[in-house]
Image 1 (cartoon, rainbow, N blue to C red):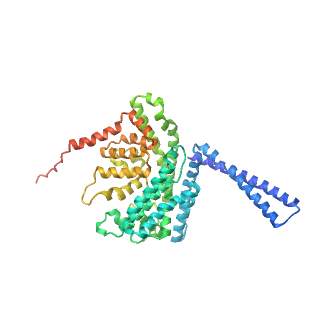
Image 2 (image 1 turned 180 degrees about the vertical axis):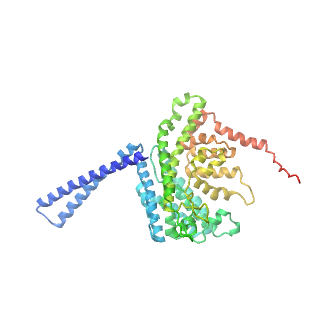
Image 3 (image 1 turned 90 degrees about the vertical axis):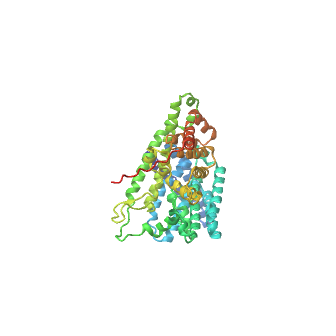
Length: 498
């Protein structure tokens, strides 16, 4: 990552110098024209100035060729533009701390997020974002009792429509990028905000702890809502956070209020750690990708390998792909931490000597790689989205007094699959994950992730067939055996009376 940054910096310096030279030559020529021209009228000056501006702008845009920079680090121009804006969220989030007023902070959050979206995806991206934002706010304003339900289904419907229209999965595989990734995060935000506003009407004793903590009694103002939705630190790739946390952070209330000792936690150490982690993850990803390309699954040589070599390759392909996500989430974490929003309290509230910065933590890398059970995966992978699914899907389809079962798990994983897109690979991955979690077979994680990576039905089934669907057969067998051979309850041992 450091090498790529240096290359980008050198290219930018060279291009700026070339632009200055071009501009100076144009200025000199313009000066000669004014000296030799018999006319010195205002109209002539305006025409010459306009011509100079058009020529300079055209020359600058031609000179500022991002394709060479993109080629130097091995990505497409669209991805490079996105990465530059994505990394820029760190200094922009730091600048949020310098904005003096609450209103100013809300405006800054909304404006910076919209501006970075424009630079990354174009003007149309902000129009797309306005649709779910309008749905959510209108439902809260017009019909509060059903605002959560309305926003959930209409928001997901629009997101699915964008997935289908842009075929975002194919674009991502080919090195392209569009605004649907940011739209996915935004959809979860507007849904949670509407549901929490709906929960504000309910009696507190009927709510779960998460509902009590996140519910909104009053409707957020429009500028608060826009600031929350477009806050640049989490706008591109998450993490998802709650409206109530955003408001308390902006207003310096709750855990963000100045303590009696007047102490404010410093975010800089945790930010540096997250940035360093991002660099390591990107370096490892760039090293592994050429050795384990996804295209190998459909090559004849792959089918010529033995079973264990094919299975081992699937394992390493899944292992390689994860480091890309580790990099993205580490950058997002650094951005949220340096803004202050990532603060989640003190390890010891009395002494307040060590701050916790895990509010923006989206992955526990060692937790994923060293997991001993599939049940642990949702707790350490894409943590904030997993938390969102648990609070707003899983827990809400469990009837009061009843225990959640496989149906609730499957429904939650299906929602997650639809949220990602309607590709067969996504559906297979998340349904397979439900089987994996219920069967507790951690080895299947890398088997299942093939569908998540290649997306197409044919390529997924070819890869699965090459290892005889072992990752599907094993968890189904375990689940069926649990019904056919139920586990006998263990009787507690009674203590002998002394």
